[in-house]
Length: 425
Ligand code: FE2
Image 1: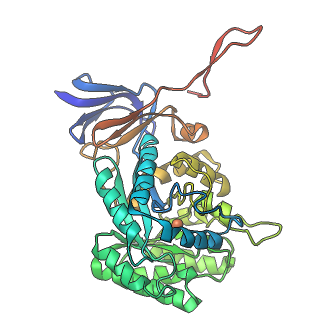
Image 2 (image 1 turned 90 degrees about the vertical axis):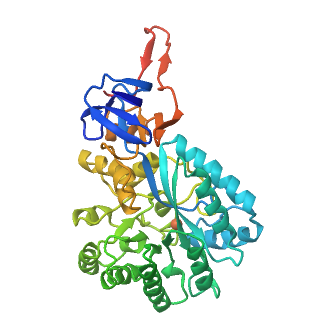
Image 3 (image 1 turned 90 degrees about the horizontal axis):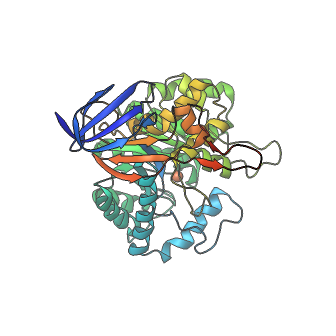
């Protein structure tokens, strides 16, 4: 027996040791020790071998545009939206595509091999839609890109958003998006949730709405989203992104809401870097964190994944395409400090995010697509603590990125020369 590639000596997230034999684009064998021939061997000795990172919430049409035409001075969501409105007329197909491809390069190098990106449909030209459809095709051999039709200026508030969102879906955009809290009234927001879910149900598409991204405890579009998922039989096909208002909601109301979300099988996508940066900006002290109720949702069996949302754009001035940064911030803000909770945070940026995006071909079992990441860490918690180096990234059976493990040689006066490893393994 021989393989095209063997990833040798690694430790899986559950702690078991496995060599992974790869033939073509598939995982062909997983055993504690494979002695077969291989075209190439990746040395993963004592390294964590994980399914790839997945980001279920991003804006690839805006990424890497930080400072064009100016920065967001107030740091609020609303200034970010108006700044994006200033940038939109300046966009060209080539510039959007070039920035997106540069971001995809960063992503692949960090083991991030699947991304759900919202794309603004409030544009007669559908310029960003065309550019990202082009990018999706270009990166398909090594990165799964899922596009969400996102009426940034409001499905009803923008007079042409409805027709342009439908045009985008007809061009091949995968998922139905929306922004009910940005509509003119709470009632318009509620109606937009209903119509967007109906559009998705008619077309057999998934739904992922920016939902209640506000500090307003009375912003309750998630209630309508759960209701529509239930009414239209879309259980397991609907996601609510952000849900930051839930941070500020009345506790009694939340005790009624969460079981409805669980029953409708609506998943939740908090974006901790952005939520903690944008929310609470109108507060004095104490300042709210603005993160949704992650532990409480997990306790009820609701699927929750961490998203990145923004890198170097009108809303966020930092970011590196590293989902370990996202999970690291998430576990702090959600206070998920127990070892089992930290391990869950790692699972959220790999397994849970893939489930939310319906990427059934990902995962480390025989027969799945051979896409994985080798991390210079002994286990998922250590990977988070170190934001561990990506020693190798394999996509569809091909090694697409490699890096040396990183140690520091210390040569201190009066002390023996040593190698400083930050690992505990
Ligand atoms: Fe977003």
